[in-house]
Image (tube, rainbow, N blue to C red; front, top):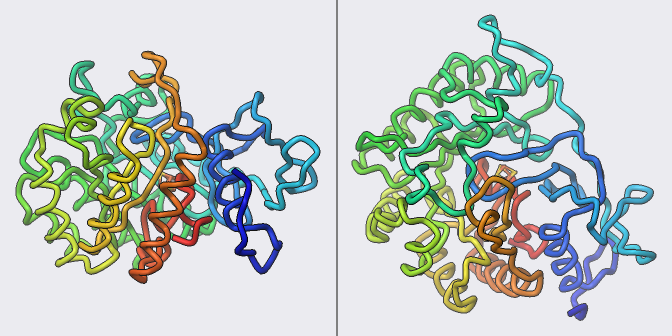
Length: 366
Ligand code: SF4
């Protein structure tokens, strides 16, 4: 559906067309050899990192995509889409090694042009085949040798200092696989945040974890100096949660709600976010209604398309990505509500919503 009346001031391209084109790029990818890639890891993304109209974008690099790059612009066949594109250059810190022989690239990755991302603990208690989230590959990058199982606070501090100094990194994302203790991984994040901020004072850091079994960990994370927190539910639909996240769905939605509310209290309005995945089979209008309830809580719903990444159980089972039209429909509605509430991803200061690369929300004005 390529219709729309609002025009962007810079290009004159109708906004709906831009959202749709960006949605198609997120799903079908682009014919491009991006120097910065994220082959697998935690969560739902698998991409090359580029800038689209100056904004971070994580797009699948796909030789079969109908979208190509010519003269710094995105083309669909012979049609110039009006979107400017440039690859993110390979950062200098990737070529450095710690004194104990670990490549910095194995410890943290550049996401977009200016985000340093790490998975502090690369294993997850839920990674057994019957428990694992169907879209996740957190332990695949471990098996391939692309990363190491646990990053020490000192290692992360060393990498962050270099990435800020050499490559202009402006914010950091720390996620973790779920650990067995009642903190569910938050304890390791606290130590990592403290060490990084001692090396790079003032760096905005977002931490990501399951709702800690003990809510005091949310305050500990804030007191360690984290700027924002992501507590990612992926879906608010109980049936979808059980089907896609058999292990994680054993944490009741009520626990998520309590953790979000505590996080908003401690971190502040629009410093808390959650992922909502489009394409898990949920009714789109219910998904949008759920996003609205999150916005009312002060939680930013980071709407992201499900994509069947290599190595996931979903890809093995032949489950496909959602349509671009579905992604456009949900993204546009959620972005409208975010704007009405005065919440922008950039105001999170750190984290996925501030980066925006894995979502189409930024293009839609969220
Ligand atoms: S949105 Fe999050 S996962 Fe995606 S590139 Fe940005 S920081 Fe990385």
